[in-house]
Length: 192
Image 1 (tube, rainbow, N blue to C red):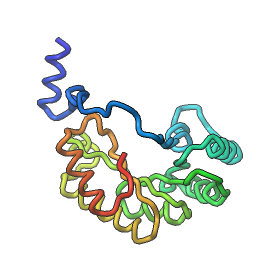
Image 2 (image 1 turned 45 degrees about the vertical axis):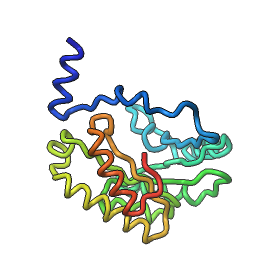
Image 3 (image 1 turned 135 degrees about the vertical axis):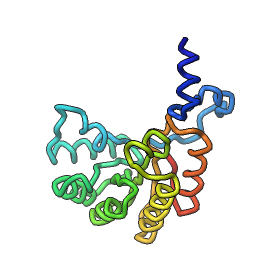
Image 4 (image 1 turned 30 degrees about the horizontal axis):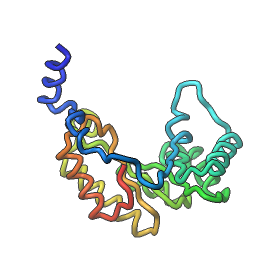
């Protein structure tokens, strides 16, 4: 029964079966593993979780001391308060971590990140049928165009660009490859 439902959803383009790719996994971990922390971006979206500015800085400093490589500290386009918080945290001075901020694949979101003085911008967008049709109400071509333009815009401002594919587990592998290739050609430094 479960396999039948899975195959039906996959045939409709709503999910992708990545279990068949297990045989292609590397046999061991790389020599160095980098840690990317999203607590200050994703964690604070949890209902009833609210951190003051002082608590956010304290957490970011602890993550920095622990050797975290990249700390995504917020989503500046969300509000003026969030933008101010991201700007202030970005100027706190960290020993090891690179401070990043998140942006949807829109120029105004990227500009909000650039205004904060972060060294890295995480540009994210979904690229599966479900999100394209019902949430973004855009074609694949429009999403590809927006993504490329936003990455190029951010790169012109000298920041490291991370491209994150939102809701990737529902995205067919050929579509993942298509948008990742476009992101790399546009100048993305990392793919997530």
